[in-house]
Length: 480
Image (cartoon, rainbow, N blue to C red):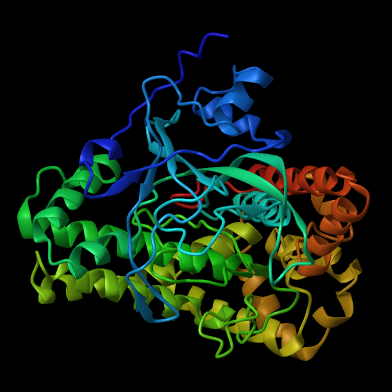
């Protein structure tokens, strides 16, 4: 079938040359069973016209897309992992498969997870468990629904191998995932170049990133461009951290190789959504000190940005970079207000008063241990939803004296043009994705090969996404 005219290949990363990536070949798999095809995003990048055989050829056997990356490239990077520097990492079970433009003109990557061994696999088999693939699909869909700027799970195939894993009952089923992302260039990509003391290559990468992702920096040069690029990454990453906090999401592993220059959330391993507010809640069983706990995520992202900035000191004065890093706190506060107010469909007012309201809200959520998703469901629409909230399963909590400041804040920020809410908000319970639900979805697949709960959950998340999109006038910046 001919490719759509909307398919716009643009393999810019390959032009950087051999210092940035290694050519690799995809593994060959005994089976190709399609489990997820993201047709909505396929349409946005001009790949929706592929038939089933073509989809399999490109996203299970990894035959190159026309005029695109060929061969696939395992990207080189280092990173701080739980704040210990590791120069032995890179794409160990994935590669950059293609780059193309979406319908908004953005340069996007198609990257893999579980596509086989690379020079950076170390002792790993380069594979992905099917459970890991299912979890990534669910996380990306839920975060997208909640307005978080996230990578998209583009394609998932079950591949017919039996894998042994220490953190899953083994043998377990295998899969290969393709994710659609707004850049796979990590903080650790720059850290690797600094490690090898290559300011020339840092300049090359800055020029590439400015041209590909921040074209507004084109008029700048040298140190000014380096500082400005860092500043853009600081603001984008601050918004990302704020959006996780508004979503009640815990990424789990905020190493410098898991944060990218466009401030997009990606790489979902031991993630969790909060059942109730708990700043100490962790997602990863191996996060023994709570370094990446829910309440510490802004700190973790800020620390990672400081390491990124440290790498840039080879080409830019530290003072200029420190000035850009100072943008983090105000950008985070603005982002938190934007995301929480969007989720509640509230009207913004005086900034300081709005931040005081958010402090009261987060404090009440933690103290009361009210259901996180239930609260945001009940009070979507602000004071206009008071009767609906009172009639819901948490109505008694909202009648307690401790809730009064939050109620007053909600009422004061109710939109003057608030009208009837989408039908979704008439349901008693919200769509949620806490760990018990995820495990139930997987149990049906593992025990009975029953994919109905998985498809039902995706359909429910789609209802949430539609409802939030219908009732919120302004999308959050960067949440396309």
